[in-house]
Length: 251
Image (spheres, rainbow, N blue to C red):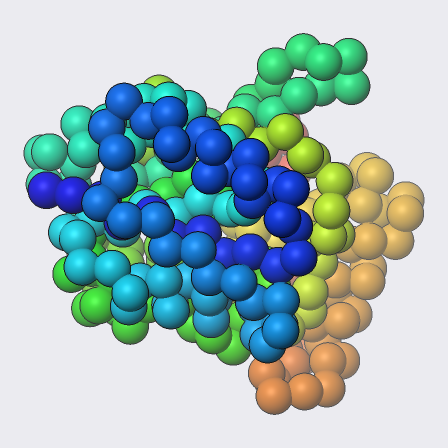
């Protein structure tokens, strides 16, 4: 049982080199490393990851990003965790705090759906083929959560493996906010998206207008992805607001 590693990249040669150097130090080497450079086409990471999936042939496909640094036992940990037949796994992610302290970027323990990031995920190839790979309508952000939800909706489980670690040194970069992606993820599974929407509601997002920007954007968006109807918007945000209040009170 081997592991193909797929890494999309876009004009970040120095960070990609750091990622590849970490993969060279693995205690168990991957069967292949599929780097897909999207610098010329700029079609997004979903497109690049699908190309990478098609290039390999191993039973397991692991995903990370070009600005991530897998731990030395990453491939070994993936093989161990998936030796029980698990269809997919989600691993832990660490980063550095403002003072250089090590922090985790793991999903909230109370979140069931607002998670699944390709900084550190792996799937059996047959699962990826069954669900059709990544949805290339996502240009950036949320394509990984969408893939996981479709796998879960098809009857597969994704195991949480916090000991399978990838380090993400660079916390900056693209602001993770794209109305197209939010609408696509909502259409993927409106009920699951309620948890995502509830996480977007906070005192800060209300004060700085980010929550309103999201609500208005999803309601008035013009593009290939249809905007929410008035009833859809009301149902989503009323449920999300209630869930957010319960979430805050439960801490």
